[in-house]
Image (cartoon, rainbow, N blue to C red):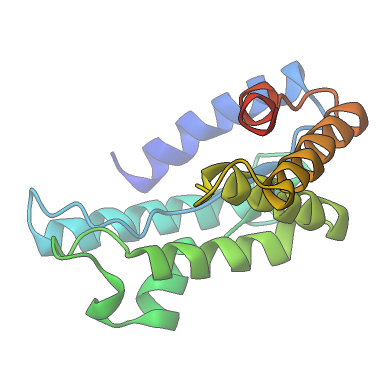
Length: 173
């Protein structure tokens, strides 16, 4: 598709989304994953078209009247900030875990409140604890460990009813 075709289609989609939810926050991004099946040049041309399309959608004189939209530069972070093939897996197309974590950290810094970051940190801690395999499961220390994490799960479910820690709670019970 051309830039104009993409912009035209997205203008229709975004207007529809706005009627569905006027408070919707929309974040555009271009994936840093390389699509190499058609070739390197074609991958770069495709990314350029996508970048032009998104930036045209985001210009102040765009037909869009959605106040809550932005662009997150995932593509640029991997290709310009990290810009080294050691940040790609062996297939030379997909970013490594280190690159993914770098982009996630930048995304979190921009879009997450301190409360959200704290919640994610606690969830990550619970997930790590649920993977723990004790040498001796019959100790008082391990019983307390499980009790602490069971309690953390219960507290988070009370504070955030949309979260479900039933699987983790089974591990800690």
